[in-house]
Image (cartoon, rainbow, N blue to C red; front, side, top):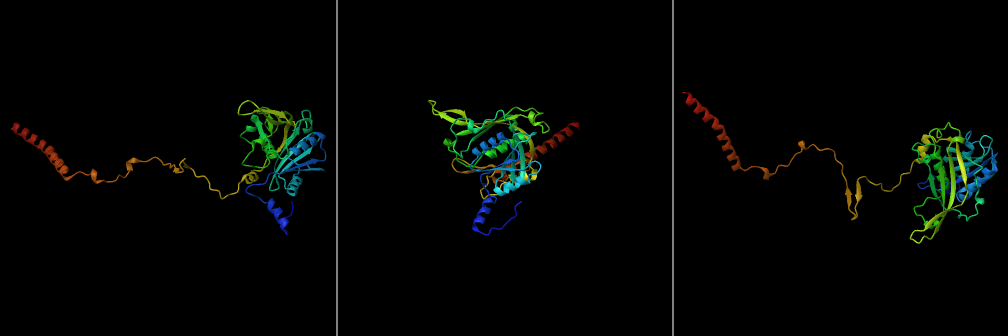
Length: 333
């Protein structure tokens, strides 16, 4: 790790402030590296990926004796030295030919890694497609097709989806110009079985990822909406997923944490209608009406005359049984 140095000049201070954490982070930069042994196919694939990410990317051509899954300290050093949180490392060996390792860092420490094994038979480079090329810095549309990407449990395919999104995302904006949507990146996966998704299965038996890039052509359709056609742009790559290093739970939680802002949070059960009036909804529990205290009103009280009439009626009702008893005793005599 690099030692911390206090800035002595205004230029170095601005450089450190640029690297400091922000509420809205800068676009993620990618660093392209190669190992001591790297096939020409893997180098061509890295060159095509670099061409699609050229603005926010750096590429080194020197050989690096690095083994990411054995010792990732060198990749962490390159990440901090070049301020890049996404690293693509190409290598090739007899056991793992044409391999491209995707690695992500958080706070210049290794977060997670995933190996992509490139199929040399179906690979077609960007130069083999004789079509018009998209301008540098254009953001693509992205489509992921396949049930493997929709797993509720994190696995190699969900990690691959996250890494590919980080690779092609670019700058985040809240406004999109429809004219700037010129190409689309389509990543499809074969339908996996339960045995193929387990980590113990060999990479050759896992589902294949198909990466395709198409140009978007809009033509007249005689209606308000144009007719959309796709033309393959390149590159064409097929991958199989290999070794994986899952992120640490505490580090992942820290990486996903968002900074507190001064923006007012939305309150529950409060909304504003079309007239601008604030309407609130209150949820109460079950009410016990037997203990409800009612208000005593004068209108509900009886008058004195009504009380006298009621007393007279009650007295008559009590005197009737006495008269009956007297009459019954006289008959017996």
